[in-house]
Length: 113
Length: 117
Image (cartoon, rainbow over all chains, first blue to last red; front, top):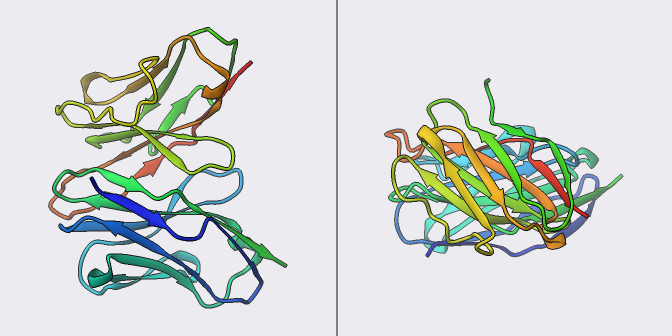
């Protein structure tokens, strides 16, 4: 069965610090990869996605993620975080054969002003 | 509507009562998921519907939980004989699955906050 592992459960940063959240998955076939974000009091929404092509994908609010197939990874990055980035971040993988998405446990990011 | 709609948004129930939570997915989305999110916890997968295939019920925590999806659209999650540990936010998501474009982005509803007292 496919699984998604997010290495950091809770990350605390100061504003302007750089961010990298790890995500690894276990599935050898073709995948779609996603990062979702849940801001306090809001519903989950898409941050960025990878289907094919350039493995470096850019999303909203200056976020980007790089798909490294050999490492089964899809880490999320942002060069300079803002207080408004405080949220919970979820990595997700879709097995395109079965069409089912699997989510990681989430990483809570707290950015101190 | 344009998005995934869940009702009710909040539900308070007494321990031992049955509850039904409803999800209206985005029109045309063949895949529908139910997740549970407890305070400070991640997303707990409950059940997955895909078209006319048999649902993947592997995440249902006990036989008190069941879900249906009628006509490939609206879904109802039923919890029988509710317990306090069932208190959580229940999220529904829908997506296009296995499309030619490969776009399986999930769209989430606002959730139903269930409190069992």
